[in-house]
Structure formats: C-alpha cells, structure tokens
Amino acid sequence: MDATDQHEDLNAVIRQHSEWLATQLHVQRESLFPPDAKKEMRKFTSGEAAALLGVNDSYLRKLHLDGKGPSPELTPGNRRIYSAQDIQELRVLLEKTARRPGDYLPGRREGDHLQIIGVMNFKGGSGKTTTSAHLAQRLALKGYRVLAIDLDPQASLTALHGVQPELDLQEGGTLYDAIRYDSPAPISTVIRKTYIPNLDLIPGNLELMEFEHETPRALAQGNAGLFFFRVKEALAQVDPDYDVVVIDCPPQLGFLTMSALSAATGVLVTIHPEMLDVMSMSQFLRMTADLMDVIAESGADMSHDWMRYLLTRYEPADGPQNRVVAFLRSMYGDKVLNAPMLKSTAISDAGLTKQTLYEVERSAFTRSTYDRAIESLNAVNDEIAELIQKTWGRR
Image 1: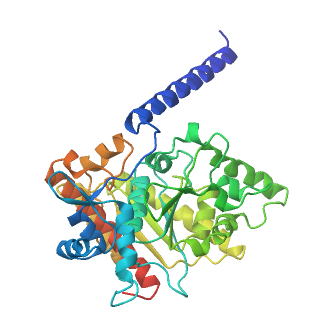
Image 2: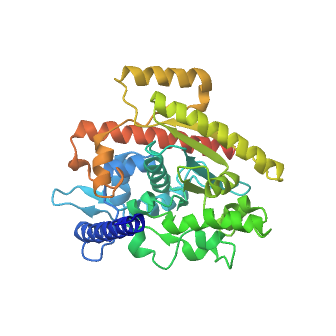
C-alpha cells in the first residue's frame, strides 16, 4: 500500500467516524428532547423567581392573590412555579410602578450604546464557552435583551442551545452569511429565537472557517476593505434590538477573532489558574497587542469600555492555583474579576445533557453542590452586569 492509499484510507476513516458521531448525537438529542427535539427552559420556584426579580417571595404571592400579572402554575403540593416568560411579564408589570427607571428592566436607555462582549482566550479548555453561555442566559433572565453569537467553528455554544450544527445548519445560517465578501446576507436572517425570553442566538459551525480562508485572498485582490469592521458593521444593522451581545470567540487569533475584537466594547479573557495556562496567556496577550497595533494603524478605534480577566475552573483548596491567583491579582489588580468561576461537577454534569446550570433542575444534584456552583456563576455574571451598568453611567 503506497502513501496515497494510506492517506485515502485515513480520510475515509475520519469521514466515517464523523458521520457515525453526528448520527449518534442526533439520536441522543431526540431522546433528550422528545418529540420534536426542541429544548425548553425549566420552570422556576417562587423563591427563584423572586430572586431574579429582586423582590420578596411574599410580594410575588400578593401579586398572585391580587390577580396581577401572569398566573403561576401550581404544583400538586400547591407551590407556585413560574416560567421564564412569566418572569419577563412580571418585569414589565413591576417596571411600570418602579421607584427608579431600570429597577426591573435594566437594559439600555436613550444615549446608551450597545454592549458587545468578546469572550476569548488563545487556549482551549479555559471555560470560554461555559462562560459565554451562562453569561448570556443570566443577563437574559435578569431582563437584558441579549444576542449570543457563536463565532467558534467548533460550535459548542450552538450545541448547548439545542442546535446541532452538522444537521441543523446544512444550508448556512451562521454569522459567516452576514460577513462574507460576496453577497453578504442581512444579519437578521441568521438570528434565531431561543427557548429563553430575551435571548437570541446566531449559531456557528465549520462554515465560519471560510472567513479565515477567504480573507487572505480578498486582501491579496484588494477586495477585503477594512475586513476587521465586518462584524461591527453587521451588528450595526440590529443595534436598536439588543442591550448586550455576547460573542464566544474561537480559541485562536485569526481573522474572526480580530473582527470580533474590533467590534467589542468589552473584552473578557478567561484563564484557568495553572502555570501552563498563564504562560499560554502571556503569548496570547503579546500576539493580541501586536495585531491590535496593526488594526489601529489602519484607522480603527481599538479603545474598549473595559477589559477583565476571569478565573475559571478555580479550586479554592488547591495551593498551587491559589499562588497563581495571587500572582495574577498582584499584577493586574482590579482587572481580575473579584468573583472566580469555581470548578464544579454540577456544571460539567449539566453539560453531558447539553444544558447549562441555569437549565437543570436543582434536584438533579446534592443541594450543597448545586448551591455552591450557582452562587459562583451568579457572582461572576452579576459582576459583569455591574460593569455594563457603570459603562452606561449607572450604579
């Protein structure tokens, strides 16, 4: 067998394995979300709903007894449970009588600019997609109008939201359609509603790699223009429709990441506090700075409202990790978010069924495991929400 035969055999094996895996993933999705394989958001207890709204449970009960707002579902034990849509309707109701504008609908007001958050790292496994998914969902549940964009060709954010890239996106439907060089489509044509109110999604798949391949050709032919503005220009088409855009960037410094950086108003760098990861981040930061200099020389404004580092998969009892954390905080100070994202079996176990921790039932875990993980996630995401509010000039 010559080298060509071996190469062809390897191609055949890889393709066959890809098809097998795609088929089994589809079977798994059908079994997890029958009968139409579409995900739904779980219901929330009255305590959870009250916490999301920032009111007392007793006040929610009074609204229910007074016949105001949506009627919650009653369990066999006569407990009230609320859908995500119920919570959104309650937000609208409560905002009408709020003491201050934005107490219940915290999004943009006149003069506020769209917040575009690029979540990025050079190294895979840093928790980038986990961070993006939970941030987008938490902001949506807190009343922000959110657009989540999967810019990673591996499309994990897409899969988490119930879209199987190799089956559901065979005819396009990613951001590539809106930023391609020949006949770009309106970005509105690739935006999908999700099963969470206030949260829309632009899914991703391997087609995004076409932008990486086409940009060098377009530059050589003089047809690329200011290629790094393509994501920003596409998002400008739907600027009034959202408060926050969360972009899950690919784990590489390619043309997609450069275009996302040019569009971003805030940059969140995820970092696992291990020395090898910190060394990798050093190279990532150096390369990013060099590329941003090149983009700035082309006339782009590369200033951002904020940049922060998020510690992910953090284990408080791990001595070496704590030394790395202390090292990072001594260097970067308040550029490191106060709240770390803790490593938790609850988050990884939820991912086995393509769910975030906000989607799974608390009863699926021991109470202490779930509470520890959800408190960590909420602390991270609410700290980012505070940054957004400060950018808009509010406390």
